[in-house]
Length: 344
Image 1: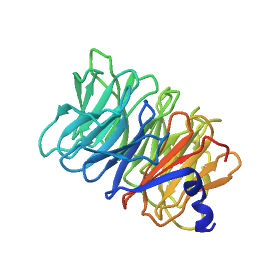
Image 2: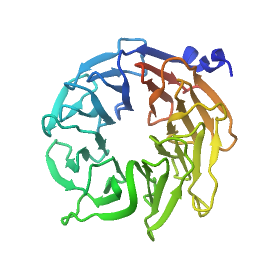
Image 3: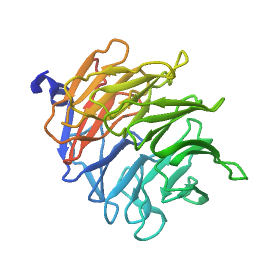
């Protein structure tokens, strides 16, 4: 595909900015705004309804933003290498939820619409309520590599060395269900129906557990480490980065055990850096190491180009809740937002 074709949607339906620092992560707030967390410690906020207006810059962390998530009700939750957990409102007002230690890194954050917030620092996973009060601290055998709430907000999972821990957040006795598998585990995802947990491993493979019976699922063959895991809305497919195509594993009909993955939009040898499944349809967005962004329909394999290569490797990618807007950011500090509310 030509660069002209690949840039079509961004040029005709999008807005973009040079933000000047590595885009560490992005999230659409539950209020509808869009936030980008940057390596220079700032948060940039834009309103998708008026992306041509100034993108608000908020001085958040003294150092880099290490993690970003949509907060429980609106705005954003960020962790930094200054040891602070912050909430930033849509208008840019910043509130410190916790200072977890100078010279320490808040590497992972998550929030659930019920009001729960989570932040990890080393071996500790801290849980906070909607008022910012610390509920409990959950300890793990090694540094936490990733965290995720289940769809109902009743459980939180944390990956670490030799597996993952699954906690009931309201339990009076904080004893996790240990999901064991040797090796170092990083990115983590819980299927939408809460039946499976999957982690990305240091050794270019995924590992999964079927919670009903503890059945292990080994998904290997990646040429690089997987950084992004994304289930489709009904949990039928798991899209992953880490290969020169979008690798999608079937989680139906007994899969992924004994099933081959589907590969979409590959073949040119460029690594897929990031994936994000549409919140409603079996469609996945992908960003590549050369800056290419595209959308692929799983059933047909049809590919729609969103943005051309040339602005740095994709480091952040995500949809809004309605699935009408797609945003991306790159290692070189370029950010884009595309309006897909009209039929492609």
